[in-house]
Length: 456
Image (cartoon, rainbow, N blue to C red; front, side, top):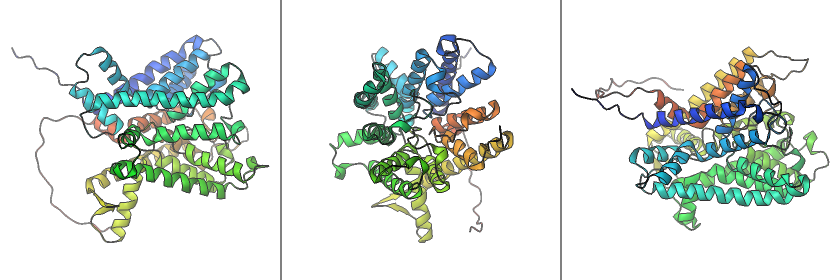
């Protein structure tokens, strides 16, 4: 009698189920009576809110239907920040750290492959060093950020300012955007260079990705030795930050919230807007107060997002760059896509277009559904405008966390739509698609006849 050994699940399915398990465990912890200020188990709708927050924290988004500072106890805040930290580091990083701690032989091939896929690496060798670097680098940046934030928070809040510094440093580095100060995020610190710049620095470093700062360290900060991807990530990030800051400064110059602000204050707020839109979720300018142009710019930046293999979301800077360069190549009549002195394979462009279109289709579909589900007016206030709903859906799938005061008003059905978007945005569209794909033993190498269609 022959026994068949069932093969391991695919790496893609392993990653998708890992995040789902974290979300489920987090939602159960947030349902405990001592996790909420009310001290009650709550109803089904309370669980939906808990599931929403657990998803938002694990997927490092920041959207929440309740005020984090008022709804949850200290235990609830600890659960949320733990989910943020695990979600920011990545489920696979956590598993790799545990395996390295309990296994004398370190990581196996399966764990190495999963780790590389989750952080955007390319080599299976040196994964153990990469895991240690991610852990130490994360702790270092968050520790320094917490100390700097404490300089402001301890005088403002007393001893609890220590906890505020730690919480917001982790949340900013992981690009989560959760805050425990109050319902207005960091509006009170809009003109404070210390808080604004520290939060922005943490967001940018976390959004660059583990492989980028690893390469910077290996090259001893020598730009001439950086890898092609590192240069692309750094230049793309800088270009988006500079362009975003200047455009926000122009569009929001007359924003009512900036009354009494000088040029330096407005420049600081514009830089914060351009930074937080890249999947962070904090704000010093209420998103609902933005002009139409500022709102559209925020949506565009949220859709693009951060860099691959980082704590941020979105379609990613490299994806956007490849698509734009591919468009320019087609318009110039060139077959090859060149960026600088390098040529990009056509398969990379196909993958980038697949990701872009998938995000776009999901965003449009979710926007249509929520607009159809939610009433146009509640208590005479037009909250469910088209722009507000699209802002919400892009924020969810881009794992950003910014909202135009819509999250707390929508129904449970709409919350489930946003939960799905946040999950897909963190796991990754392609990862989820590959996880659903059934593995086949063999596939015939048959290619269909080639034909042409008219384009444009």
